[in-house]
Image (tube, rainbow over all chains, first blue to last red):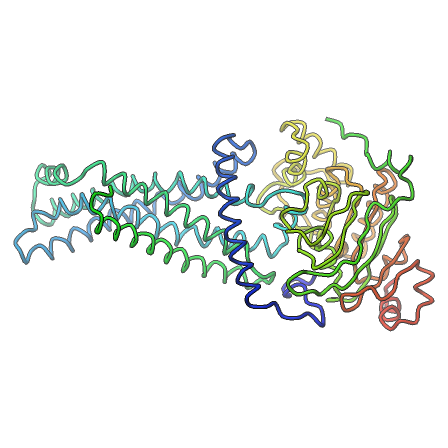
Length: 274
Length: 264
């Protein structure tokens, strides 16, 4: 095989039928989801041995490595949200309610969404690029030829790490958004710390935190599965690596935002649902 | 842990001598868009079968099909007497079959993010369920067997291509397979390193008795101890036989391959 060439193409190779390509991709996606869930359950149940130590490495990369970015961005988002909410409420002379709005909106929406978007920007493209690079270099084929399931050794550890890292980062982000809100309320809007905390106490409930964490878990699965799908299904040419990384960012953003929209619609139309 | 006595040696010194360890029957594929058409070939225990062909003749796809990495349109693969329908889903190709075939991919295909020793350990941990220490000892022994002595944390990217190929050979032989498949084994190697690799494979083949199938565009493999040679063109086998039979062939592709400058 010649590196860089689309492999393999005989001189009289007929083109792949479009319907065959479409159904094949659907089947491979369904299989990816099924096997990922299977190996994830195995990993949780057994500890995973060598695979388990891979999870630790991934948590360091995907979770701990993102602390600084998530921390800084969350404080800034808290400040931005405070200014924006206060500005909108000023028309009704209700800036004093900005603390309440931050408390409710931060945990339910801003925290999980900020973390998901930052993880997509920082890690999803990296995951897809890593898998695509391994596909191009025949490392995935080598695993399969040895009878080793790439989903078990490559995808499951990353999914497990994302499932631990995103909720943890979301809790951190929630706290730092509230910190940004405190800075905005006390330093720029002129409210006291006691008043801000009282506003939070009135609005913030554990239910908001749980809704945010449920979203974080769903986002982690979406990001991991989309990145794996894009990274593992590439043609064997070098440019496929960057293409997979780009496609992953776009697909992950759309998947996460679409899921969040759906959740918001459910909460709006069925208020008793959480 | 000492490496287990090679099963292949026992096989070749006993009742299985002369029996094909690998047979490919009427293989056509891949199923979506066939580029390989009705290929038949076999590999006897302890022998070497070279599949020669120009670039894009279908050699690599043939290897992928018989390894079950692609789904075939039709055909059967027989590994050590057990046959597998090549038309099944690629993921259902049994682990048993895959553990009986060791593969050295073109470019080595080592996992770049883990150490060399971990690369060799992987199949042992997965298939033999050995503990971590035994797997590590066995991996080091396998690496010494192919002439490699590396620190535990050395990664594939820290060694040269020739060393990478040796590591890939050690990994391919970790489960003591009856068949070793090598796709363009000398790709990217200088002639000296390529010759050294050939010598190592020959030595290990004599010691352990596995059959070797080599896919290459280099005719020199046909002149270095190949017991049988298949020449591929356009996804078909256009000529098959011993070196002497091929030299007598008037087929255009055969003449083209054998007469390449420096091919011997």
